[in-house]
Image (cartoon, rainbow, N blue to C red; front, side, top):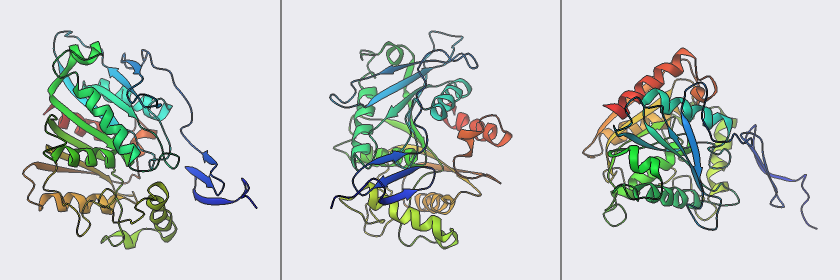
Length: 319
């Protein structure tokens, strides 16, 4: 007998519900906010489609209101969070945040929509994001298909950033860039990882995580990556024994941001410490926000702690 819609295979509360018959129910960030000019920040945005032909992969580009139209500004390629299973650049959560990010840090931002799991399992999110990055890089000589990137982006100050799963993507693309074959034409100044989603089977500190939360996280990677369901897959656990390590990270600077009450705080700290002692030749910084939880800044953009975090991110991009 075929499974009915009522039989649940996996549920992450308030995020996603996956049924045994393949039906997927997303529980947040399913809204769509059109691109345009934001009245609060003055930031202009537009969507560019057909990044990966035949798919729904697109980018939303954000251009701040510039006083000097002839000065090029840092370029940030941003990957949204959502556990690889929810959200898009057009959801209000990310559209509002990217408007503010572009305005406050004075960068041109490219927010990437990659295909979501479980319908599109790992490594599709990484491959889509890599293709979007390659599309962005195609503008580095000033002759790409998009005028905003040609005219305003300083490719000498190119950064990758993201929160949660998006930070995981930014890290993994930087590792891919560090591969001499794959990254030979890509030069990244730095990556800003905000509350990064990493996991693993035996990371010191995870024993403090609530057992139910840990169980949900233990099941997430096998759900989105059935081809390699091991939680110590190096894409999920960058410091896994036997993995490639961190010395090949293909950028000069890294900013790691964690939050005191985030269940992912410990893996973020372990990543920061491991990178610092790995032999990687770059500089790594740590920012910890007291009293806040995972991705708090996305949902309360104007709170003091969110403003402090934005200030640190702005300094990283503009240093």
